[in-house]
Length: 396
Image (tube, rainbow, N blue to C red; front, side, top):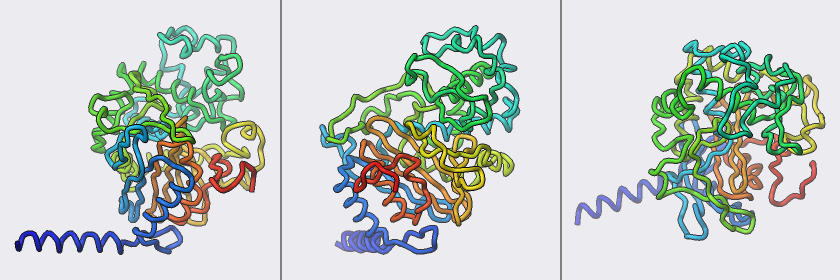
């Protein structure tokens, strides 16, 4: 009887603590954890977001980690903080950190043209998948200028993916190193070169340099059997389930699977500057290229509405950078059909947030959720194509 009474008191105290917990925002205001939980549920219900996991950091560590909604509506599987997500382009942030680890070990240089690490001209390599070859570049020698830094800053001049191009071919649209143009092709090129240098697959490199050192036991760039029993599936705007893809080949640009708990370990390492030297972190988050475009994707990616003097947006090595009144923030997104993710950190404040959703509607609540959770009203939601659920797709 006394044991039951003791457990009841402990449970009541824990509930009371969680209910009263205050989360600090970047402007030094606070929000009650219970109030935030209620607001997240309201936003998800209104915008029809299927499932969501979120982690909020204060003092450079997670203080609020929760899961909401469904991992799979069709099976009524509930989301939890151990649910595996396809992380989409969160993969690129981990890749940037991994590359910087290899730079500090003198495996590769950021500024040496990648061709210097290869035993033959890039177009001469053959691939099991024809879409990954580089024969299209044979008559454009500008590929010889491309460096690791250009790949991570998205200044190779490549398109995002050649499969999105009308002719399905790989081309160089801008002189390398001159223009920001988001490119998964550039990331894959650097992955290929690293695999040639080390003789290891990128999955092995990621495990050795990132996942194992940081204790990310539920993360991988290829599907693991251990993920079978608890993973999310993507959903469209009508809550229909998309077909789930279990990747068997690592792709540094977008094949990583992870959980909110594991990815929080990665962000903790970034905020607490673990795994790299101080100079390494300065290099990782150095604003290398100014971003001038009206939007990141679509026709407006070709339209500039900013200048170098006025833009708050830059790119570092695998991360976007945002100048704010609270110092430079670093951010990374992840998008595909059925998946919408966002993360941003304000290192000078020790505050960050990671949001992962398995819904096409997920990004429609990012603007309000960022402002509510951490007071972030600086994320360029229009540039990100994060059109709020209660607005039409037009510039404010």
